[in-house]
Image (cartoon, rainbow, N blue to C red; front, top):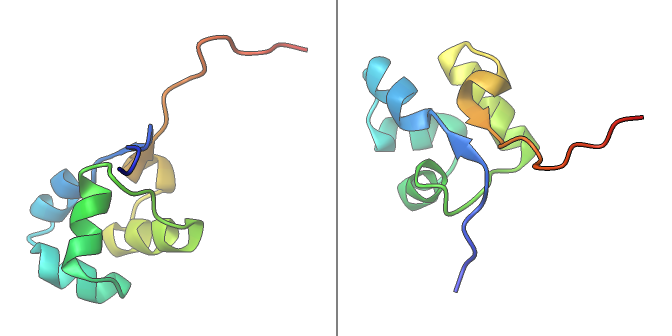
Length: 77
């Protein structure tokens, strides 16, 4: 069983706003539609390189595409 990632994303919203299908986006970033679905659903975290490629397709920064919840107990120096 694959453990879901804590990373969330806005890929579906961005993809639909751009008028792209899953197949079209998958082709543009060089992955299969199944891989893109897994990333969109938070079942798989992309590599850093792939994350940058996704952000570049939409012309936005990484933090506009991917979010990570803040640590419950943030350390301070």
